[in-house]
Length: 369
Ligand code: BGC
Image 1 (tube, rainbow, N blue to C red):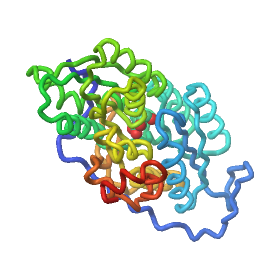
Image 2 (image 1 turned 90 degrees about the vertical axis):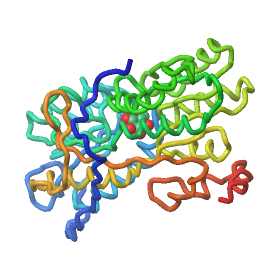
Image 3 (image 1 turned 30 degrees about the vertical axis):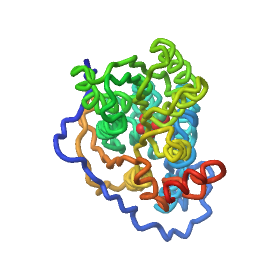
């Protein structure tokens, strides 16, 4: 039974927001370390970014941080980016500190909806705008915008990828590793892939070995959970629906430890490790999300709000359980060994040199990369 937490009132095609970053400031106050008083003068308006952790996915520190920094600074605002390393009270403090330091806008990647809603409510009470970055905060009226990807589509692509990779193997035994139960995205991903794989279970084509959520997207916990799944299945697993590259890699490591053959494993984020796993044949697909577009769209909104202007970005309404949040949703795409090279050169995609380094080089050669 698929869980019910879908807020996808928008029926239509994925809304693509081509975010062009607003022509940037030729502000002459380029030093701008903002000495504390927010009382005007040459100080740039301040935007705080609250990242969730650095372990649930490498994306936050290696891709989102630099791209947000760049886009915000190009728009003439001061960016202050912190990372809560998975700790809700740390994130709360970082939000309070940002407001004390004069932030006009907070770009928030929440650690769960409850703590996110508390941060948003506090910000709202002090006239600070909140943009949900990547993860929607549910059940609050205090978030002003939401910028992310079509996350049900991410899940659908994972489900379809697994179906293709498993092919017509009879009675395939499939294990499912979901993301964190506290992340609304994990629910959306699951809605997406369940729509594709549940019919396979229902028809008897596939058998579900197990379906488990991984708390906090913790890769170490994913390894333990997957080892238990292998145990339960007597090592017979023919495919793994893993909700991101980190969880996929945990499954791959467990299979390798037991010297089991390669099986199709899915992923998400097009991380260096995920793409190397694809080139090596250990992973069947990942989902590439053009984070530069996400970062630029969020920055465009933040820059306008921080300058006291009304954003002109085109949005769609997404219901968070309390209100319809004006949202920008970018489009995800699947990556398999057949199109690994398609996104080489993108600023949010690993380089060919990094992917094909060291021991991976031989397999890159085989793929003609
Ligand atoms: C993001 C994914 C990421 C996961 C773990 C999700 O909310 O959308 O890109 O892999 O969190 O950090």
